[in-house]
Length: 94
Image (cartoon, rainbow, N blue to C red; front, side, top):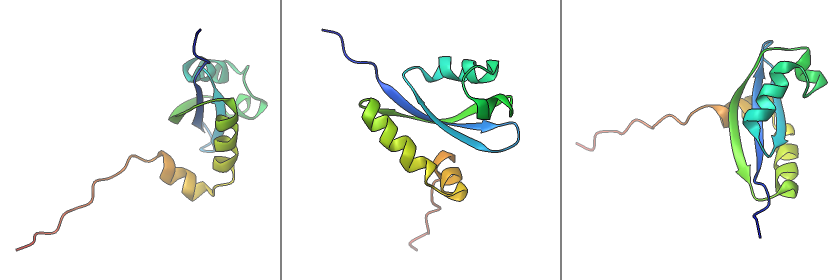
């Protein structure tokens, strides 16, 4: 028996600086569709888009729940989610 497809939640940055959240079983293919103008009315008007972040989910339901949770975040919280973690500076203990 084959495994069900892995679902992904992803965030795109549009040309106008806005963020778009979506789900897919193949985020690379989906990015190509977005940039071709065939994936979403929202991104079609804001091309080009680039993938900022993606997160694997166990199934379609989990992906939908995570997508909705991300869509409820503020822009600041979304930017924090997609920014690479910066290592904390260590204080000298001497």
